[in-house]
Length: 379
Ligand code: KG4
Ligand code: ZN
Image (cartoon, rainbow, N blue to C red):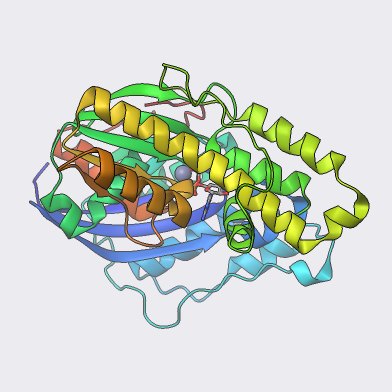
């Protein structure tokens, strides 16, 4: 595989359909095309991701986005047709995909290789992207690679030129998403050691589940962090699980249980009080942030990385970013904290293409005939 290449990325592991084309040329990386169709408005109706619904929406959106990325310019919109078959409880919940206007791309087969998320994720959702990738590999003869979604999150921080200039191994990664909370030592590209992981719920799940039990909606992270701005972080005594445990593992299910107990202990009037909800949100956020920050600093002191990256949906949390930034500045002299471009914290195909490029550069590829989803894949 030559070092200069255009990689087509396809991501369908959960509730975002995303397609990207990136061009990698030595140290230069350009995102030539990137569009994500979020299914969040649909899953909000159900209070969480419904796998079958996700897979059906991916079918429609993957075709639409590939069409735009590759410039087939086929005039059709499957999304609304498909979405009508989704039984919605509320008429206001009609699913509308908002795609930017204009010509998105006209480079028919303008890519050298295909990177598609292989796992972890929802099996039926993953298979939609994989089948699309396999079909393209078959008809174009281009190489394909199944990408570990978690490696994709690690690669998201590599999309920023400034970060690539400071990309020195060993690196420590705090990878916090809806399904994963991990501290990873990156010894080199594609060479990782997981130092700690969650023993039960992930940090994103803690946000999502506590928001759900408070009746705030989905996804919980952005909702809680928005409400937390008006709240007092010391208003409720939310536990910091495993904060003083010598391991680098996390555990967030106890936090969720504690919040349930607090919420159920409130009167109906208190629960309807916006200030009480904001206070509880601020307390939840402070607890999660403190655990993530403390463990990351402890891992950094132990493993002495050259830099730290924070990636995954939860790392979009401004409170977490501020806490980690000041913690690193205060306690880890000379260590840089790197994060993905804005909008690339949550699932996207540019990061999948980037991780695919890492693998292609190392000479790896998969046989499209055998590529299948690996829903339980880990780093
Ligand atoms: O990385 P991601 O898009 O998907 C997975 O791979 O899981 O992460 C989604 C998670 C959700 O749990 C969501 O609540 C959380 O990221 N999230 C946030 C924020 N934005 C998204 N959590 C805290 N604060 C945010 N601002
Ligand atoms: Zn993700």
